Image (cartoon, helix red, strand yellow):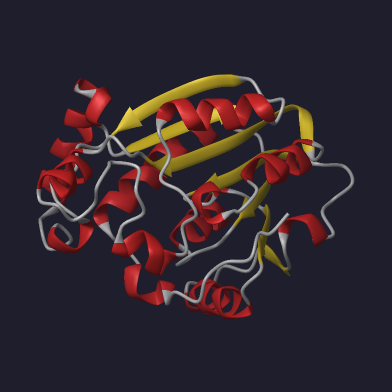
Length: 238
């Protein structure tokens, strides 16, 4: 199964508001499920490191696996700058990583499945490392997002699940529909225990990053009110 990441410079997308809101959901759910106990965490794909920093502030046993040496070095430097030293890095493809035989309480894949040529194979592999009462946390962009419908009407893409220019730059293999994501989880032998669509995105990220957080929080709530047009879905499976 091919799980290499692209060469995108993730340092350019640190601290984006819509990503911060996605991380807030993960933090809320992790703390709820952990019930105040320290848990063993595995993060797959570190990206810009925003998720990693949150995990390192909340938990004492965090492992990150990413096939990009550059990404690992970028995130390690961010952790060092914030005096956070609890994270272990595995610079490896998912299927080759020396993961803990005892498993993990929570495995986190935020914005990762679209980067994998064989997401079902990766999920099957990771499922072996989930503790008995553990959980896999997943978030992906959704094809039904308003800004993708706008792209169709403007002739930029021919259908909502077509890879756009930004998808290609980011190394995406697909744009998920809710149905496709559910099918991939089912094919991997996983059951969905929680799902939450969120964030209404009328325009591409590049046109929205300068907007104040208050607007992004409002769009977050609108995505929950109109889930059929939400830009993201967060899921838990086991």
